[in-house]
Image (cartoon, rainbow, N blue to C red; front, side, top):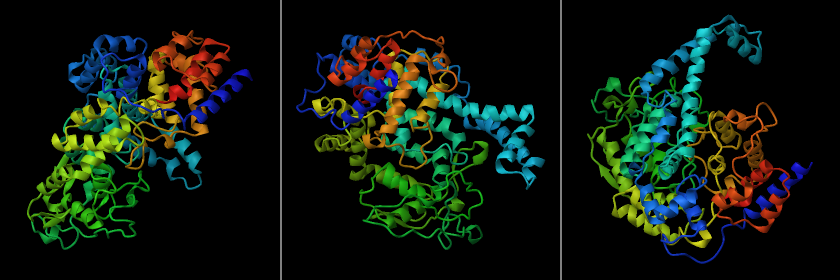
Length: 569
């Protein structure tokens, strides 16, 4: 009863604090050369996934300006220890074709054989009993290939958490997560799962602090994106001018433009994503506007960026023929001129001449990157990520100007934001609520919890409402407090904190033993030390009073992790 009462008190305090924390007044000078602990913790929370024990002292030795500059140049940081940890995940370095041949295609064949089993064909069987019979009908070899397919996805999810916890290149990991969310694809949409490893490794990561144009083009040509937003099947509508001008090859069945828009540019979500697991193989081909719409609304201009429904249609025409070679065998991007509408197009009042082929799409990307709305939209999202849910307009303006001056250099835009007076302002401190991913990773980092088995953490992030690679809509996960702050979510976070620090989970084995600890672990860090290293020693009287009610060291640690102060960054 006492533990329950303490937990309820902690959750109540957190709810009360979420609407008031981080609203101080005044500003500090940009990148102080002699920062206090509070400022260093602020930087560690914003440029990465939070401090570990000893990080404050390490940053002070390096110097805060030098630390920020090093994080902006991750290639200068030795991350050998992380590479050693990732070496155990065999699938991370494999090509998409290798993954298809070794994991996904054998599993697909096993499922097809299972579908043809007598149990699957028995009309008298219920759905549940038929599924059970099909599972029982699998041979040991079939069971193994299905397990291997799941393991390939599991390794990707585990690796994401290992990187976030252990990488010395914290800003790079934060930016990879940011851009994956910005250019979101959903693991549950058909064969997207086959391309996820390549998408994050070869598309997002190399460009996370590079040129936005390069990143945008890489996502546009990625099979993961092409399949997720159905552009791989988008073809010239009936009557359009084709690249080879062969009427026999013209595609019929054009999709009619949707109507019912609000103000110009405010476009509804793609209807084809309503059932994201449905196969698109048997759909009648025609012009598909999904990618064109999200390209402008979510990837570049923003919903108020000045485009119209006519622009959506013209952009969709420009990207016809951008498809995938042998998609289910792990194929790559290819341009098919037979599917391309090669007629003249007008996008944002800019004329694209007929006969351009693939260059039509490339021209659209260049046009969007150069548009002032894109500079402002990307600057706003980055400022929201690093500073506040509603970032200062002056900072967004400066970041957008830097975007335009540098031709979309992401590193320089981020530098502008994280070295600004607004970033170091008092009212930016603890102004952001941690997402479930940030909370789980920061808790593991702050407590020094070993990770011999990462799967419990993958499940914990899922249980808190943010399954890795599992955001269905193209909007990605929200980066504002209201998406993550409610009594149920905060209670679940407290339960995770209790599990992490004490090894008790309520059902099944505890989390700590699964992470390599003994059944009744003695925490390696005390609550007072945790408050100092993770919160710069700053907690409210209410939080201190709640922690004081703890009867054990693990309980005190859990209350620190569940406190309003730790929930914010």
